[in-house]
Length: 492
Image (cartoon, rainbow, N blue to C red; front, side, top):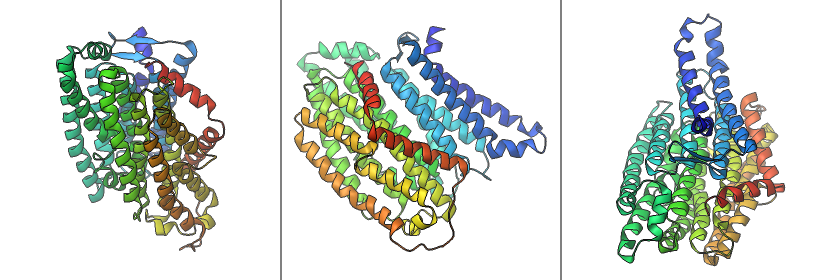
């Protein structure tokens, strides 16, 4: 039962997902007045209760100090996994709230919320998995759910996006599995602790094998993290997927990709014998992702494609922290703590951006940036919310994005990766051009329609909470920094 307790947040998400399916299956037996109520908010309310329940269980585990392994040490409950359990449950709750109005009048709403909860459970499992088999199972649990979510609208663009995501995801899964096979063959174990022990005692004759395993794993996980050159799916999938799903991919999938990468590379392959090799790899990928992501975002006229390329650039900033981990910085795991903090700050920021986009685009019927003209005169709160999110993505105070970039650039400097920090600053300046172009469109251009725009209550609440989070973290970041450092410390 102790193992079940430690997997409580994930089990709640899966149990409520099953409950939503059961209630929906029997909803035809409901009265004529109850079925519309279920479709207009009942399914969303039950899914939201599941996300909140998972959040509450994770909080209880934190308060009681419950830590340890579960199910023969394939899963580990520690500050690292708890940090991400809270993050993913919160993201799932935000996505459910953001989807309520978006799904009104569409079929298969219950299935949509089931897939959101299932994805969140898989993402949370990834953060605590310390065995290659469980890591792969959790990766596939999230991937299969996300493939269906991307193609949920069933129109031409959504179906094309779902197919692209599926095909590229299959290739990434194969690469990840090949890397895991090499690790198992070299170490004789699928457990990360045993792999770390084998790496620390390996001779030079095994070095090439471990380097190849690291390259294959980086390539496979690069798809989840949306880093160059594994980013080709991002703009089309973000544009074609339902906007709440695009938000889920940009925050949840990316955070899980980096969480499992931290587990694999810091805990399993963190020995100096091999760390310098994958550190160079991540440094190069960081430079490419920041530069190409920002340059490709410059000419974009669709707000979702712009945010897609922006997420590629943001992934480059995350990789700076991973590169710093391997470079032997004077403060242990400073780079890891910076990545974890950045992921949480980015979650608030991107959720605010996508929630504002959902609220605006749902009313104007367009994702074209030009149609956002004069939005400040039609809905000043939404225009301000999107502005704050874009300012945070740029890295301007007093937002969470500023503190996150300052933290991660400091980690790079401390690790003698000054060139990478300088390149990150330069790319942040470049990104200001396309972010602030959207802001100018909303505040300076004349509105194309005069009537005011009011968001639905659920999406308005999502925007409010996300914006409040990015401002609170920007002004008072120390509690989140302490939590990120505690999560990083268990990997040392």
